[in-house]
Image (cartoon, rainbow, N blue to C red; front, side):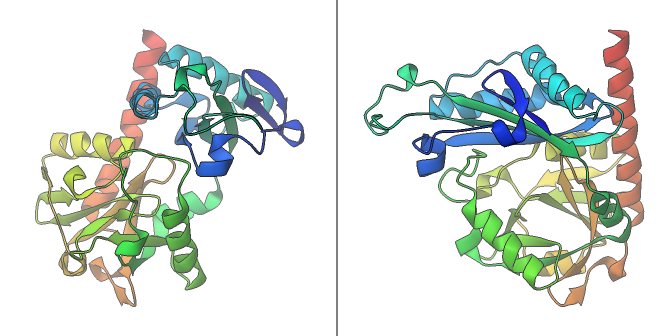
Length: 294
């Protein structure tokens, strides 16, 4: 496997990052994950824009040009023979630092961030879950994202713990709640529910990470004739919903068929979920075609 580390394409087992890097010491950094469709990076500009916003908040230097990232990721895909398949791409940026760096007082402008890019083939489990549907386990507020939910930071421990607990109990995902027992999101997904022709997802004001795919689904659902709204929901709303599904850049749209020990949406994917899955895939191809023509 080849990876990109600080602009250099190298073998993965040769990649080295200092143990004094602030990302390792404090989780001081950010990351993003996107999906490559046979070499086409869907919604790359949106992912780069989000990284740029987060990097500005963290005062980490960042190149906001999508072309730069398209080139770097393309090199990783090519080096790993992933141009003709679907791949999961991770971009990670940490603050950097060395043995004599005062991570509290140092001027961020004087730091050299560490940039890491890795790509792997999308697991067959992703398409399997899209077909059969996911079972999710509700988790209490201790597992919510934290004080800076809008930043996809390297401090991802609550979400990882929630997902580990859920998987250990035989579930596919963890559904996170706040202190008022309102549904926030899942550990690695945003969540939607459909009632009639109203599609609802938790508001970003509740303290969630609004995913890139979430935003695109809101647009596509409106185009398909659904009324979309960002509002609070409770677990009982998921249980009584006509359809429930998860979204993410790699998992795309994945139906939810179970919550805790009971079924959701009669234990199968709904008609609108399947319709939106189709619309999403069509949008990928339309976007690819428009980019190629431009």
